[in-house]
Each structure stands twice: as structure tokens, then as C-alpha cells.
Image 1: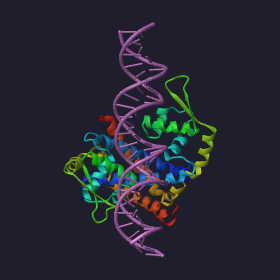
Image 2: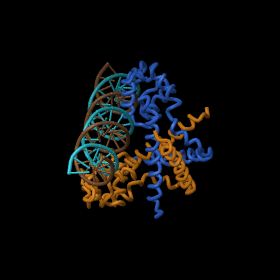
Image 3: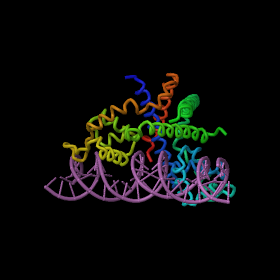
Image 4: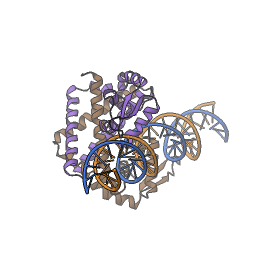
Length: 150
Length: 150
DNA sequence: AAATAATATTTCGTGTACGAAATATTTGAG
DNA sequence: CTCAAATATTTCGTACACGAAATATTATTT
């Protein structure tokens, strides 16, 4: 009943449920302006890190490079982001928002997470503990991956 | 600095990072047997709920019906699951594992989450609190969605 | 300086993930 | 009994999400 496998399964399940819930709720907020959740995140990161490169953007958004390349592609097509080749290192690219991108970023800053605000009714202690435990989990999972590769 | 929007963003970010980490780690465990994370989950659910229908499976796996239909499709093509029309209600389907599906389920039961086991080094209290807080979050987010639709 | 390795990004193929529309069947209203 | 509403599933189009391979450029080796 209470074997380790079950415990892990519970944790995974809990994360999966919340992740899906977040995704669906955020989608509703952002559908009105024609953005996806990830596009919202990427817009935010680029706005806070002008002239960021693709690999760094991928790291900050926890996506692989190929995924990130596609997301940027759609943002460029939508006229929200400019992709330029870097002069110093012509392998790299340099990303920044267009006028329209800045506008949309400012517009969505306040409404992008509106429907998640019920979470703020939780005791501040709970939220703090949550973030702390998450951090511990990340450490446990990433330490092993560096010392015991493959 | 500490405005509500930032607090929410931190939470979302934390979940996103862990979800991506889980996904990547589980992928490595399961790649050896040719399963994806979701296929593993669906196999587990079907094995525990023989003759389950599609909608119910979708609910238990937190996916939409159309996504679930596709996942089942690939499991059927891989010869792990049987999809039959229900005799009582010919609109519904009834899912169960094949011999091969049962074998793979038993095989992956122990190895499917192996690389997540470092999480069990965390204090039992932390894990318990984590699950409790997650549960509170789910309640906060789903209550609103029932009373304030749209 | 030419071949080679390393780095940054894109492209490709497969598999989630969604909502909307299409299909099939059952249930309900008249 | 018939036609419309409801329910269950699939199909379609778009957008993540990954790794592997391809491409382009820079750095290193010899």
C-alpha cells in the first residue's frame, strides 16, 4: 500500500494534475489576446532580457532548443519579436520585442494570471513552504544528474 | 517587487520547472522500453480499471478526450491495448490490456520511476505537506470554476 | 592555412495537448 | 413513432515538446 513506488506516483500525479489545471486556466486568460501560455512566458523573458540568445532563452523557459526555436518562430511571424543575427558571433541570434510586442506584454502583464489569483488566498506560509519544498526537490533531482550522468 | 503578480509568477515558474524536470527524467527511464510518460500512466490506469471507457480515462489522466483518443490509438497500434465497442452502449468503448500490455506494465512498474527516487530522501513531513498544499491549491482553483463559469 | 572540433540554431519526425467540428448512437419531446 | 437533443468518440488544425540530424559559423589542432 505505502511502498515507495506509490509515494512517487502520488507526487507525480499531483504535479501532473496541477500542471494541467494551470495550463487550462492560463489558456483561458490568454486566448482573448491570441497568446499561448508559453508565448506569454517567452514574451516576458525577452522583455526582461533584451538581446537574449536562443539557448539562454531555452534555459530560462525550461524548454529544449528546438522547441524554443519554434516558439520564437511563431512570435516573429506574429510580429511581436525580432530575430537578428549577432554581429560579434554570427552563429547566435539576438531577440527583442517589437513595438507591438511591448504593447501586448504590458497589456497581458496584469491579465495573464488573473484566474490563478484564488491561489493568493492561501496562507502566506503555505506558499512559502511550497516554494521551499519545490526547491529542495529540484536540488535532489539535479544533483544526481550531474554526478551520475547517463 | 512583491506584488501579487510576481508571487503568482513564482508559483507558476516553480511548477513549470519541476514538471519539465519530471518529464525529462521519466522519459529517460521509459525510453528503454519504448514508452512515453503518458503511455506509462495510461497503461497503469487501464490495468487498474479494466474495461474503462475513454471519457473516464481522460478524466483520470487529466487529458482532454481528443488527446486521450490519440494516446489510446498509439497503444492499440503498439499491440498493448484492445479497444472494443461496448455492447450495452454502442457509443462507448471498452479498454483493456493485451498479454503484451500486462507484461510491459509489470516490467515498467518497478523501473518507471527509478530516477525520481532521490525525492524519497526528503523528510516524510515535507512530502506530506507538499501533497496537502497541492490539494488545497486544486480546491481553490476548481471551486471557482464551478461557481463562476465562463 | 587546412582539417577538425566545438558551438548556436534550425529542420525533421514523432508524440502530446487543446478546442471545434464531424460521426455515431442513445435518449427525450412531441 | 419521429425528429431533435444529448452523449461518446474520432478527426482536424494548430501549437508545444523532445532528440537526432543538418546547417552555419567560430575556435582549435596540427
